Image (cartoon, rainbow, N blue to C red):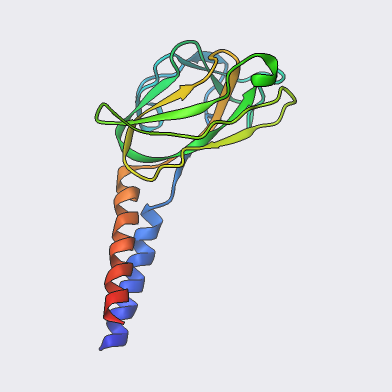
Length: 179
C-alpha cells in the first residue's frame, strides 16, 4: 500500500511538472517594426516597448531575428501574477557612458525585489539578466539607459505553473515527513 501511494505521488508530481515549465517569449511571430500590443504573451501592458526584425549591431537578438527596444520607463505588466525569471539583453554598457541594466520587480504595487545589474559591452554579445527572485510578480521594470539596449527571450512561469511548482514542494515535504 505504501509503495502505491508513493507511485501516485510521483505520478502527480510528474503531471504537475508539465504545468510548471517556463514560458519564453521569443517574439519570432512578429514582423517588421511596431509597438508591442497589450495582451501579447500574457503581458497586459507593454508600456513603451517596440519590436523590430532587421540587423543592427550591437543590438543583436539572443535568438531568431526579432527583439524589443524601449523608449520610455522600461516597464511591462503581466495579466496574472508570475514567477519572473529574466531576459536577454544586448547593446551598450557603462564603459560607453551608459548605466548598467537591472530589474525592479513589483507585486500589487509594492517593490518586492531589485536584481543585481549587468554591464554590457557593444561587441554583439547577449547577456542574461536573471531576476534573482522566486516570488509573485505582476510588474517588471528595466532600470538602465533606455534606448541603448534591446531585450529578447523574456522568461517567466505563469500562475498555473507557479502553483504547480508550489504543489511539487508541498508533495516533497509531505513525502519527506512520511519517511
